[in-house]
Image 1 (cartoon, rainbow, N blue to C red):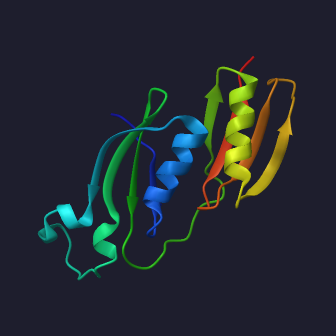
Image 2 (cartoon, rainbow, N blue to C red; image 1 turned 120 degrees about the vertical axis):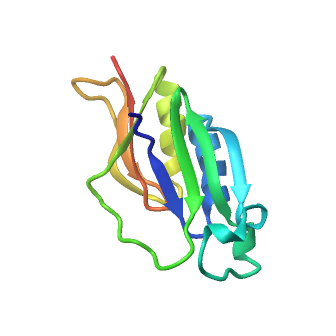
Length: 137
């Protein structure tokens, strides 16, 4: 079995991909828009705007595969207990990701040094996803 984190958005998936490319060096390996997918995959009608939404995307943060997509329909409630933690190779990379993600988001734990990390922070990005950012010492 393989567990793959999957992030769902409501029309902001491509914007989020850009943010994560800047924060983590996200590498997109596959991107499919609703306009390019078989409409038989869903049983609802979509608007012209929704045709440009991301139907399915696959990407990597380092060696970790993730999937991303835009949902069409009612928003699901989130789980604040789930945190995606990214471990970086340098303190500078932690700081860069922190500065990128906190814009339009909220800080849970500010960037600081802890007993187990020379650089760590926790933020909720502007899309509502909670990220743990750390340097593993």
